[in-house]
Amino acid sequence: MALKTLSAKAAAALDRDLMCTGAFSIDQLMELAGLSVSQAVYRVHPISKGKRILVAVGPGNNGGDGLVAARHLCHYGYQPTIYYPKRSNNELYQRLAKQLEDLDIPFVDDFQTALQSSDHVLDAVFGFSFSGEVREPFPAVIQAMSETKIPVTSVDAPSSWDIEEGPPKSGIGSNFHPDVLISLTAPKHLAKHFRGRHFIGGRFVTPAIAEKYDFDVPAYEGVDQIVEVGPDGSRL
Amino acid sequence: MALKTLSAKAAAALDRDLMCTGAFSIDQLMELAGLSVSQAVYRVHPISKGKRILVAVGPGNNGGDGLVAARHLCHYGYQPTIYYPKRSNNELYQRLAKQLEDLDIPFVDDFQTALQSSDHVLDAVFGFSFSGEVREPFPAVIQAMSETKIPVTSVDAPSSWDIEEGPPKSGIGSNFHPDVLISLTAPKHLAKHFRGRHFIGGRFVTPAIAEKYDFDVPAYEGVDQIVEVGPDGSRL
Image (tube, rainbow over all chains, first blue to last red; front, side, top):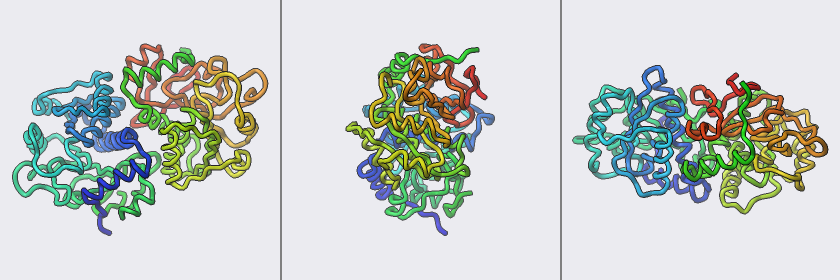
């Protein structure tokens, strides 16, 4: 059995289906996506391994998932720190950021310095809508995440990877190999190039949607919002 | 230590605080509230005890929590059935109902008949904004939930109970004693009259909000969205 994956185009269409015909709001989907991400971090990096989670937040939906995850991680007892250099005017992201400020979660301007005093990094910079070049100020962030000895968990895609082809052949991101990937709803094509621990999250996909996009809803356990899968996509 | 509880007025003010100064959307809060409810049902009534969950859904926010819980229960492997006689025109509830229809979850018109073939009942009829008389068609529903041998879990309040005073002294609801109560954000005054298993859910309250309303955020464990508490409100 081979891992079933989605193209960037299919992932975007699936999101539209969830929100249009599926009647989900982006608030709902982002809350459940971010919750999944927080549970994956808890699974691979329990609090006993260190509380300090640095969250690199990009300007779009991937960043939004990171903001939600940071809030849940704070409630679990972690100490998140947020690097969010390109704040969106989008009202949803502003609210998600406010929710973190109300928990006294610090926002920092210097990623590299914050990295020195962190135990784990959550990469929520770019998701499945990424293409083209990594824009400023993110090249240095990708570089730092490529070089750090601290474990890195990427949300939906290792940031800078091509959604279809995986790691770039040269330049920024070519040596970025995060330890953990959490694919939201279903893995994207890039997951075939990923060699770390792989989770799937987003427990809201209906059987009809999974059938339409030709993937299998993974066998989640109990009330878990995540499931760890092997190279063929079956539950570990 | 005595159980710290909220008046109906304080509970309403807390909700307003979460949405205004706290910047939460109702979609977010209802998603997390309903998720908590689904986890409490899973805890007290694992699938091995029977999959068939009848969800009694009222016209307001309590009903919305029930609709969300039913979706999550379906994803856990239960077979929910929805009794939702007074559908709201509110766009959010319409979307939540659509999400259930997309999972082929049946909506039924006859509560008592559905009760005959159910293993557990989720009472999401009225919440903390309830006051006055139980309107049609709910008196017969409360009566059936009072008399059934099937375990009943109430969301935020046993429906028909006075939020401050607890069970009515006579008439509808005076003999309604559900097995399980899940209090959302914090118990309401009525919880002092409740003798079953008691959970608290809604893991999004900031320390500042808890301080303002004079209650303690309970000691949730791991990634749990619920915590079971004893008569004094401490974790069991």
